[in-house]
Amino acid sequence: MKCLLPLFLFFFGGTPLYADMALLLHQPHSTFGFFNPTGHAALYLSRVCAETPVRLRRCGDGEMGVVISRYNRVAGYDWIAIPLIPFLYAVDYPEQVPDFIDRDGVMAFRDAWRRNYLPNLAPDAKDGAIPKGDWTQLVGAAYDRKIYGFLVETEEADDDAFIETMNSRDNKRRFNLFFRNCADFVKDTINFYYPKATRRNFIADVGLTTPKQVTKSFVRFLRCNPDLRFSTFLIPQVDGDIGRSKAVRGVLETFVMSKKYAVPLAIVSPWVAVGGVAAYVTEGRFNPEKHVSVVLDPVELKEHISAFSEYSHDEPPFTGRHEEPAIEITASSENL
Image (tube, rainbow, N blue to C red; front, side):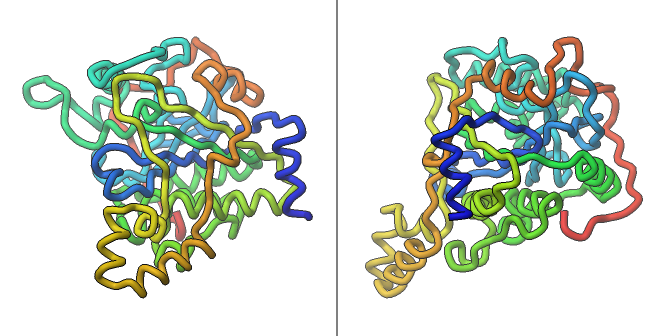
């Protein structure tokens, strides 16, 4: 009953949006998402802002915070922080988000924001054209995917400690699909704020850390801690002539729910297939759609976030936007 009480309050009581820290669960998309539908995980922090994309500071009045995540091949860095609205829509202000867009429009928005704010992380190609690479993951996420948010309050002192930790550690590429992926980064960061709040699932994901299982364990933690203020939201994928994202899945869920994997596995090794189904049923089931309490368009998202942090159109997303990102390396953290 203790764990069910917050769920009751979600759906039958008022659900104000508290935006100190939010786990952002991204649906998979594109060809890579077709073969590996585990999606992506990132964190939004409302009181943490970006001095540069690779150096953090406390937010000033009117700033909305950043989305921070681990990336694989972006300028050799391990983590990068991008202001919330640009991360989602590749524009500075919610009112600039189009109602409908095509692939060329998405790239135009991304390239314009890149040229203004990311010249060092994603410089022009030799001929001055748009560079290739994974920098496109940094901005305009809501054009590619549907995103679920799971919010919880945090202490300001923990934000200061997180900023100090991240600015003092060696921010160099550490990505490893099996041991240090985006979900591992989110798991370790949440546990920095709330120790042992999230974990991997060795049964459902055969030892890997996946965005869905980190989210599932985080939701369980929130349900069983009714003293914490928390809520959920959904950021829908922007309408347009672009591919739609798909449901996010765990490792075993991918094999037992996808015909491209389930049928060959059942033929080659039926007992393994049966075991996978049993493991998924007992440990892997989680539908983030059922936990959504409010759906937010860009302007509504701004209004909800403003309950904690009033947005100012006079403040740019970064300070010193065209300066070379500088990282002061004095120590390293054990977990992050």
